[in-house]
Image (cartoon, rainbow, N blue to C red; front, side, top):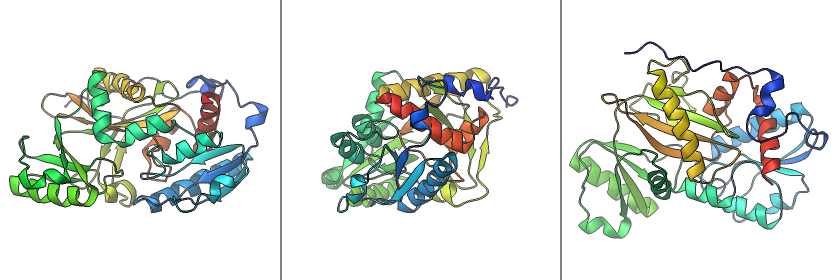
Amino acid sequence: MAPPAEQGDERMSLADLGSVGAGRASSPPNLATLDVTVLAGGPGVEREVSLDSGEAVGAALGRLGHRVSMRDIGPDDLSALSQEADFVFIALHGEFGEDGTVQGLLDKRDLRYSGSGAEASRLAMDKVASKRSFERAAVPTPAYEVVDRSQLPRWSLSLEPPVIVKPVGSGSSVDTVIARTPTEVRETVTRVATKYGQVLVERYVAGPELTVSVLGDRALPVCEIRPQREFYDYQAKYLDDDTQYLFEIALPAALLRCVQRLSLAAHQALGCSVFSRVDWMVDRETLEPFALEVNTIPGFTSHSLFPKAAARIGLSFDQFCQRIIELSWNRG
């Protein structure tokens, strides 16, 4: 195993923070004290994580001097969008909040909001559409097939187990399973496809799991994730205290630079803007990297990876939240 790779001089002075992305070098006066609505909660299975993210974001914006209104939202209650605000910070994960729905509603109201627009959000949430975009952009991704609920009676696996079985449009590894035998594959695909309508079956890549956060037009330092479970599932993401997040990584520096470059390519292939987080698996034998997905609204909790990566370049959590506002405001 190679020694821990150097990822360059990661830290930045406060004077340099404005160079991350296309935003202004310092916070303009009209962005210093805004009326901000923070959307958190929502109807999806990631509701509890979203509430934690929203609480962290709201506290940070309050410390910065913004006037913050915390609001829940769902398809049956859009009253939060009637709140007078200069800016809407979306801390919703998964269904409704991350799939382009709320972004489309905000576009119709001509309200400025954080992160990617509606179309990029929709595309990134659809794991199959994302993988097809990766392929067109020459971003490597594991071999896969898609199974619809209607295909179950006649479906047979073309990939060799083990495989990863996951819903096409969910996040946080909810209902994601490693199936190692043909029987496990059949049972898992049947269960997940029945629940969600469509399932992605993906070649299992055994090796290090990496993630790269993108802020503006810059890929932040690569982070290796080492869960104490079989893989980085919901429990390891949000509840376990023994999951390790490493920025000193025992992989070749050239590989880490390649993953950063490809992360930007994946982010751009989906039309994302402002920020995202790109998840990777590296084949332990060949050291080939494979993109799994792009998260357009990664978590803002104490366990979350994006704030950890931002800290590596000298951005405190509060500064990170402010930078998202600045970059999003310039997106229009």
